[in-house]
Length: 298
Ligand code: GDP
Image 1: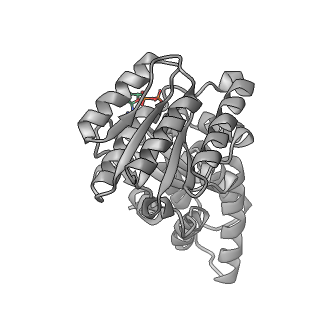
Image 2: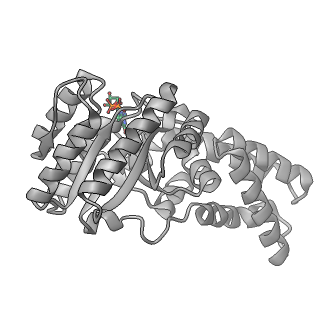
């Protein structure tokens, strides 16, 4: 599958390390756990997530009276899966009249993800509208317009430099008038100017609260998996600015740092909802932790 193919480097990075730990130790002792811990951290699983995984694993090993490393491998896989469990309501917005904001720094794949998500929702016969609220870069508006044509999705856009909240105001009016299911909003990602970004997102919130308070809200942060631990810091910073309800992890194809999916979910408790595995419209997948972990270890 495309997922498994895309995860080859991540799999090699994590699994080859883990395999050598499991085969390199004849009994389960502190050295074994130390080595396993180091391997998971090197695989971008994250310090906190790794510590939790090791703690849980130790308990399971005790409970099951396991002595041989090889025998606890399935317990490790099970524990990683547990750390990544999504909430049950992860995709509720798909079945409600909703406003989905895509947030994140430039270059992570925000505009592309708006396009792919539109494609995915349209394939479910949803009525979708895109809002080009990244008015900071003319290229972002042009690029989104291309995606709207490619996916046959309506787009609401103004000229470069216009007020993003004004674009959202128009887009909300269109969404209501046309009875849209999902309004997908691209936004500008100026994290280096945190105060402005916060003001901008607050203003957008006020516009939505005033003109469409009954809409179901979803704020998805877009993170580039190839940036590894940087993605985690971006998530922390944006969480201080706005309420993030989920993650789209892009560029999972070809990176060795896919372990970041585990780190993010376990450290921040925010679910990864979609992963990007390429640049085409079909290259966005719903994130399934079981499928993901199985693709890593099988
Ligand atoms: P934005 O600045 O956050 O809106 O980022 P863009 O949507 O413009 O994407 C930046 C670049 O990343 C573009 O060249 C995209 O084609 C590419 N890109 C986005 N998502 C993925 C992905 O999942 N896989 C790969 N390989 N490339 C991606």
